[in-house]
Length: 452
Image (cartoon, rainbow, N blue to C red; front, side, top):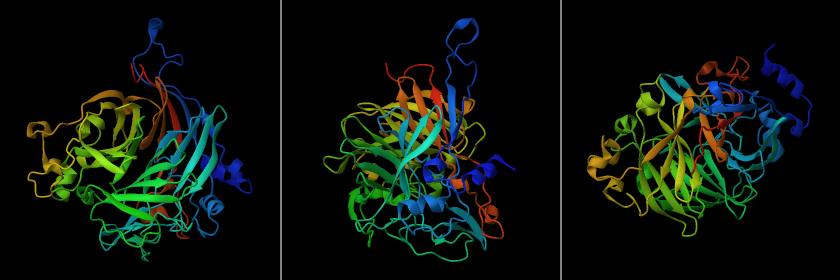
């Protein structure tokens, strides 16, 4: 019997607080004390601990927040909470957020269909505690509309999003304008949360109890029927985001401004150009003025530098951005297998906001530039902090990064709720064939402080 099956059998009949408890196994790359031969400090990062989330049935979790939302979880366990990681202010505690829920792809007649095996799932904000005994789910907040209903993770618009289907890709599901594919999370001083979403892409302001207050979307999105306030406050050029590659990174600067990172290059002037591009866009949003005040140009490293085993540029993604100073960020560039963290300083001014690079008529588009600087585009300068692909013990698909000390980080991965793509994701009875990939929190010590 596998370890995962053992944990499931032990979970039956236990209260949710106990279901949330996980085991921690300390691991380290290199020597335990961080010193090499001769007693000199090592100049490489090392893992100091790794915690794995235990099995919590998804129906029990969801219905505990909003009764009756999930009738059948198809044996899917709570996962997908690794979309981001934000410190609560208490040692070892973090806010995390799920994405839109279990989803996959199945080919039907040669075309891929997006499946939602648990369509009633509602994205949630989850507070976890990591300590010497493990990781515990301390609190959870469902994301709800103005009238208190689940927002769900279903796609919004037939004109822009993939059509949603049942687990077997045979039956269409209804679109939902309230649906959110949540990713980054930060908590403001007033206790409210800010999230980013991949569908719009959008910036979402949420109350301290999980109710959506305002969703800021690109100009021209024309999202109708949402049961919360929708404001077209973001540049219209974002309407050309790649499907499933909207906003993923979100940082809260000490002054209160937010930095939003588009996960991948926009599809400008077309999809092929976006797939081949290494140029992405960051936005600075003033929470006081409720508007975008700057747009920054950022350029990926070549894909073979980020991930030596990859040659497809379209696999590059920005997943996490973290404030490490008044105008400084820690930025994660990744593929699903590897990642690198860079230190970036934000310049003054509005950057490329409102410039020709936001004009769809500009040719070549910003995304097509092999050398943006030669075309007068000021690209954010970056300095490598750590190549996670070279650190033993760091799992793949790291999507959340939190600063826990001057030279320490916590990382969290997205396990996709144990889902895989293809019809084989479920057995003949429609039950999940789990991938075996667990949600894990990894503790990392850097060779030097993040700031001087």
